[in-house]
Length: 173
Length: 146
Image (cartoon, rainbow over all chains, first blue to last red; front, side, top):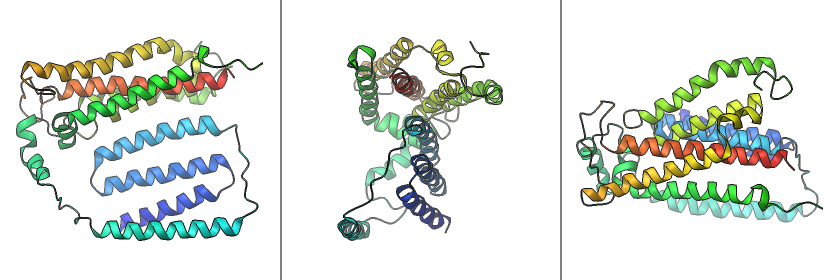
């Protein structure tokens, strides 16, 4: 029940984020979607994801607000509204059709298909010694994936520091 | 530099920041160290550590934050974190395979348990915290120097 209220709130906040004219209000509406998603993770009993979602949402909001607060871009809305509306509605219809086809095939909540999941839950503590099963999976059973994820973050930081450093930028004449 | 009224936000924000920023940093370190016992872990704790420095920068201006963590220190620490994670992974070859848990497991629910998992959490925490702060620092410096 709470989950459905949260989902309706998220859809409403997303529509507000698209439709509002002011850029700062739009960023704050996106933040509302993120915090509602954090609460949804808590209701679905995934506190690890909730903590990560919360802190990453705060960091993204701070960066977005600092990047957009003085650059209020004008919104172009005139012209071709019939084409825009029709294409938007048709894309929504296609998306809903494929989502319905895909969601029909999903297994029930709490009944995983993969047999290895049951093995993780039964032998996680005895094989790794870690009580938090999420940490046991991402740092022991699936540590190679975590290494790749860490490499992605490392590469992005190197890229940002290399592109935005002082000798890398052209001087404005 | 800290009490310069020209930079940063108002006195109210600065006072509250001075009281809370240490607690936020401490909470991030707690989340990193208890990653194998309670929800959280290296990534979430690292972001909280980065947020404490971002908090410092927003309240006091960028000079104070740079005096705490300079850009060179940030990139060095990030590389150290990445290399530490990779070397923990390579140490598994002592026992035979990549990412093998070579340290003793200990008893569950203890702080010193689970072998290499706390070490991996610490490495990821250093890397993520410093890396995200470096991204924010670089973006702010570029925006100011235009």
